[in-house]
Amino acid sequence: MPFLDDANIGFEGRMASDDHQSLKLWLRLLSCSTQIETEIRKRLRTEFGMSLARFDYLAQLHRHPDGLRMNALSKFLMVTGGNVTGLTDELEKEELVERVAEPGDRRSYRVSLTRKGSKLFEKIAALHEVWVVGFFAGMSASEKKQLQSLLGNLRVQVTDLQSTGLGT
Image (tube, rainbow, N blue to C red; front, side, top):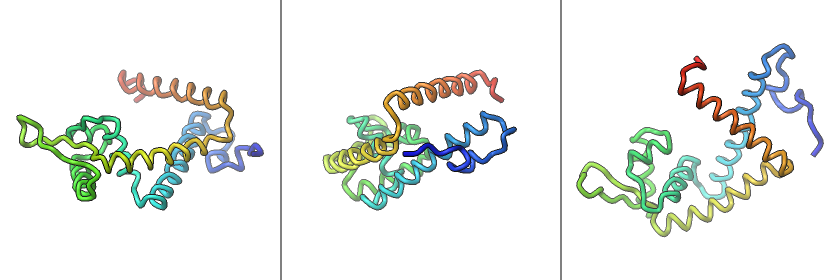
């Protein structure tokens, strides 16, 4: 793939030369993330008739074979309890998840994948992995390793700023 200069890539590449480099970088990260997420959403919808929210929900349960309490699932997905309840209702009707009352707490439920839900998720996840690998196919292994390291450094820095309040 030929290298494209910044002006040919996207809006963030067309910013004025005196714009702050950090702003350019943030816009490039956001553009890449949005573009990849949009493509994944489209492919999930086309191939499986599934939203990204449903895929993420099933992924969280797949990571926790013993299931999760509804409130923990809500925190992992970073959505409201109402959103989790709605998705749970839909997925339960499709027999992809099951909801069981927590012993000793009638108000709390644990949700887990059914065998059908697990098989479906594993099928979708395998194709999802192929898609993601394809998005990075034009990069060498060392470039991917370097990008991962740099983004890891950024994440640690942002986390530190959030915890100290110095970034505000």
